[in-house]
Image 1 (cartoon, rainbow, N blue to C red):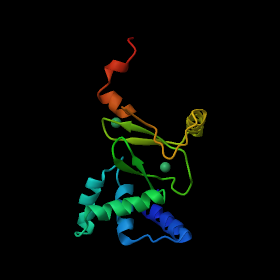
Image 2: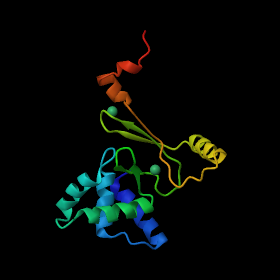
Image 3: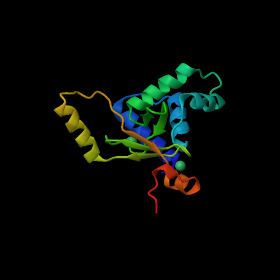
Length: 155
Ligand SMILES: [Zn+2]
Ligand SMILES: [Zn+2]
């Protein structure tokens, strides 16, 4: 789906929700959407400065807060970075596979994992406020280039 199309979807949602999709918020949205994998606030600020020379760290953090609240992006906790979500118009469970080699982040939406996790929390009398399930490793492509022999079964 093109970024233009994503912007239109996000525009519509903001109108429905009665929130303002300001030019800075749109710029940060577009920057994250055009990024492969997750991007740090610092790198976003660098890119944003090309569009808005006066942009400061709080400019980016405020825009990120907005995009997170609207569900347009996810925070990758273990990288302290941000990931565009293509499924932002539906509430969904999320697990992430993060490649240490190329930075690829695969977003999974397994309801069974989510439910099992919540069930275990409940059994422990625990009330979850926020959660993240993230795995680090190597994507298929990176395994071909530099196989991680430690985890290979001897043949
Ligand atoms: Zn998502
Ligand atoms: Zn990779």
